[in-house]
Image (tube, rainbow, N blue to C red; front, top):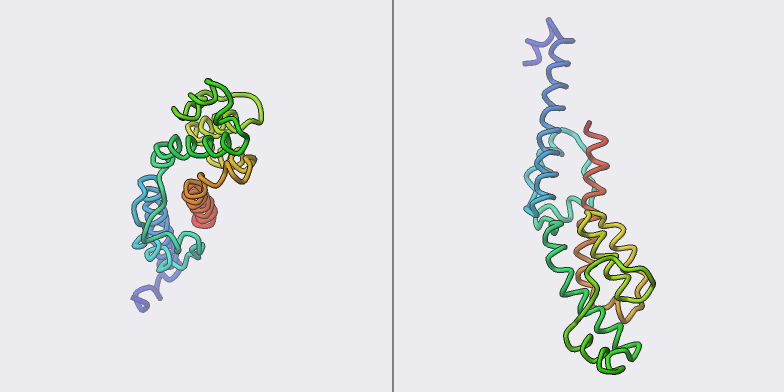
Length: 179
Protein backbone atom coordinates (compact mmCIF):
# COMPACT_ATOMS: atom_id res chain seq x y z
CA UNK A 1 0.00 0.00 0.00
CA UNK A 2 2.83 2.42 0.82
CA UNK A 3 4.60 1.71 -2.47
CA UNK A 4 1.37 2.33 -4.37
CA UNK A 5 1.06 5.66 -2.64
CA UNK A 6 4.58 6.83 -3.50
CA UNK A 7 3.68 7.74 -7.05
CA UNK A 8 0.64 9.74 -6.03
CA UNK A 9 1.43 10.20 -2.36
CA UNK A 10 -0.50 13.42 -1.98
CA UNK A 11 -3.64 11.76 -3.30
CA UNK A 12 -3.11 8.71 -1.11
CA UNK A 13 -2.75 10.84 2.01
CA UNK A 14 -5.90 12.78 1.22
CA UNK A 15 -7.85 9.57 0.66
CA UNK A 16 -6.53 8.15 3.92
CA UNK A 17 -7.43 11.32 5.85
CA UNK A 18 -10.89 11.29 4.32
CA UNK A 19 -11.41 7.65 5.31
CA UNK A 20 -10.31 8.34 8.90
CA UNK A 21 -12.63 11.35 9.10
CA UNK A 22 -15.51 9.25 7.80
CA UNK A 23 -14.81 6.49 10.33
CA UNK A 24 -14.67 9.05 13.15
CA UNK A 25 -17.98 10.61 12.17
CA UNK A 26 -19.62 7.19 11.90
CA UNK A 27 -18.33 6.13 15.32
CA UNK A 28 -19.40 9.44 16.86
CA UNK A 29 -22.88 8.99 15.38
CA UNK A 30 -23.03 5.57 17.04
CA UNK A 31 -22.03 7.11 20.39
CA UNK A 32 -24.67 9.83 20.10
CA UNK A 33 -27.33 7.29 19.15
CA UNK A 34 -26.37 5.13 22.14
CA UNK A 35 -26.67 8.14 24.45
CA UNK A 36 -30.20 8.69 23.15
CA UNK A 37 -31.20 5.04 23.49
CA UNK A 38 -29.33 4.20 26.70
CA UNK A 39 -27.42 1.35 25.09
CA UNK A 40 -23.74 0.56 25.44
CA UNK A 41 -21.30 2.30 23.13
CA UNK A 42 -18.00 0.59 23.91
CA UNK A 43 -17.50 -0.69 20.33
CA UNK A 44 -18.00 2.82 18.93
CA UNK A 45 -15.47 4.25 21.39
CA UNK A 46 -13.03 1.57 20.35
CA UNK A 47 -13.52 2.59 16.73
CA UNK A 48 -12.92 6.22 17.66
CA UNK A 49 -9.71 5.37 19.48
CA UNK A 50 -8.47 3.39 16.49
CA UNK A 51 -8.75 6.56 14.39
CA UNK A 52 -6.58 8.42 16.89
CA UNK A 53 -9.38 10.40 18.53
CA UNK A 54 -8.97 11.20 22.22
CA UNK A 55 -12.03 9.92 24.06
CA UNK A 56 -13.03 11.67 27.33
CA UNK A 57 -12.79 9.48 30.44
CA UNK A 58 -16.41 10.13 31.36
CA UNK A 59 -17.50 8.38 28.16
CA UNK A 60 -15.07 5.52 28.68
CA UNK A 61 -16.40 4.99 32.21
CA UNK A 62 -19.99 4.69 30.99
CA UNK A 63 -19.48 3.00 27.63
CA UNK A 64 -20.36 -0.55 28.67
CA UNK A 65 -23.41 0.30 30.77
CA UNK A 66 -24.77 3.22 28.76
CA UNK A 67 -26.41 6.23 30.36
CA UNK A 68 -29.99 6.79 31.47
CA UNK A 69 -32.19 8.11 28.70
CA UNK A 70 -34.11 11.36 28.91
CA UNK A 71 -37.32 9.31 28.86
CA UNK A 72 -36.16 7.17 31.79
CA UNK A 73 -35.32 10.26 33.83
CA UNK A 74 -38.72 11.79 33.07
CA UNK A 75 -40.46 8.54 34.01
CA UNK A 76 -38.62 8.12 37.31
CA UNK A 77 -38.88 11.75 38.43
CA UNK A 78 -42.45 11.78 39.84
CA UNK A 79 -41.77 9.05 42.40
CA UNK A 80 -38.51 10.68 43.49
CA UNK A 81 -40.23 14.07 43.67
CA UNK A 82 -43.06 12.69 45.84
CA UNK A 83 -40.48 11.22 48.23
CA UNK A 84 -38.57 14.51 48.31
CA UNK A 85 -41.72 16.48 48.96
CA UNK A 86 -42.76 14.10 51.75
CA UNK A 87 -39.33 14.54 53.36
CA UNK A 88 -39.55 18.32 53.04
CA UNK A 89 -43.04 18.36 54.55
CA UNK A 90 -41.95 16.10 57.41
CA UNK A 91 -38.94 18.36 58.04
CA UNK A 92 -41.09 21.50 58.16
CA UNK A 93 -43.98 19.96 60.09
CA UNK A 94 -46.41 20.50 57.18
CA UNK A 95 -47.05 16.77 57.06
CA UNK A 96 -49.56 16.95 59.86
CA UNK A 97 -50.65 20.60 59.85
CA UNK A 98 -54.40 20.41 59.45
CA UNK A 99 -56.54 18.24 57.24
CA UNK A 100 -55.04 19.72 54.04
CA UNK A 101 -51.51 18.97 55.18
CA UNK A 102 -52.51 15.48 56.21
CA UNK A 103 -54.10 14.77 52.82
CA UNK A 104 -51.15 16.23 50.91
CA UNK A 105 -48.81 14.08 52.96
CA UNK A 106 -50.85 10.89 52.68
CA UNK A 107 -51.69 11.22 49.00
CA UNK A 108 -48.34 12.65 47.88
CA UNK A 109 -50.11 15.60 46.28
CA UNK A 110 -47.75 17.95 44.45
CA UNK A 111 -47.89 20.59 41.76
CA UNK A 112 -47.58 19.31 38.22
CA UNK A 113 -47.27 22.68 36.48
CA UNK A 114 -44.41 25.10 37.18
CA UNK A 115 -45.09 27.22 40.27
CA UNK A 116 -43.48 30.42 41.52
CA UNK A 117 -41.76 30.49 44.88
CA UNK A 118 -39.03 28.76 46.79
CA UNK A 119 -41.04 26.14 48.68
CA UNK A 120 -40.15 22.53 47.82
CA UNK A 121 -43.35 21.93 45.86
CA UNK A 122 -42.66 24.94 43.62
CA UNK A 123 -39.01 24.01 43.15
CA UNK A 124 -39.89 20.42 42.22
CA UNK A 125 -42.61 21.60 39.82
CA UNK A 126 -40.09 23.81 38.00
CA UNK A 127 -37.50 21.02 37.98
CA UNK A 128 -40.00 18.63 36.41
CA UNK A 129 -41.03 21.20 33.79
CA UNK A 130 -37.37 21.84 32.89
CA UNK A 131 -36.78 18.10 32.61
CA UNK A 132 -39.81 17.68 30.33
CA UNK A 133 -38.45 20.45 28.11
CA UNK A 134 -35.05 18.76 27.87
CA UNK A 135 -33.30 21.26 30.13
CA UNK A 136 -31.56 18.77 32.40
CA UNK A 137 -29.07 21.32 33.76
CA UNK A 138 -31.91 23.60 34.83
CA UNK A 139 -33.69 20.71 36.55
CA UNK A 140 -30.54 19.84 38.49
CA UNK A 141 -30.00 23.50 39.41
CA UNK A 142 -33.53 23.71 40.82
CA UNK A 143 -33.06 20.52 42.84
CA UNK A 144 -29.80 21.85 44.29
CA UNK A 145 -31.77 24.65 46.00
CA UNK A 146 -33.76 22.20 48.13
CA UNK A 147 -32.88 21.54 51.75
CA UNK A 148 -30.65 18.57 52.55
CA UNK A 149 -33.64 16.61 53.84
CA UNK A 150 -35.63 17.21 50.65
CA UNK A 151 -32.66 16.44 48.39
CA UNK A 152 -31.80 13.14 50.08
CA UNK A 153 -34.65 11.12 48.45
CA UNK A 154 -33.54 12.54 45.09
CA UNK A 155 -29.90 11.45 45.45
CA UNK A 156 -30.28 8.38 43.23
CA UNK A 157 -32.19 10.30 40.58
CA UNK A 158 -29.69 13.16 40.67
CA UNK A 159 -26.80 10.70 40.27
CA UNK A 160 -28.43 9.20 37.17
CA UNK A 161 -29.25 12.63 35.74
CA UNK A 162 -25.70 13.79 36.38
CA UNK A 163 -24.32 10.72 34.59
CA UNK A 164 -26.40 11.65 31.56
CA UNK A 165 -25.48 15.31 31.73
CA UNK A 166 -21.74 14.59 31.97
CA UNK A 167 -21.87 12.06 29.13
CA UNK A 168 -23.74 14.48 26.86
CA UNK A 169 -21.25 17.26 27.61
CA UNK A 170 -18.33 14.93 26.90
CA UNK A 171 -19.93 13.78 23.64
CA UNK A 172 -20.44 17.41 22.58
CA UNK A 173 -16.79 18.17 23.29
CA UNK A 174 -15.76 15.06 21.38
CA UNK A 175 -17.96 16.06 18.45
CA UNK A 176 -16.21 19.42 18.26
CA UNK A 177 -12.81 17.74 17.97
CA UNK A 178 -14.01 15.11 15.47
CA UNK A 179 -15.71 17.54 13.10
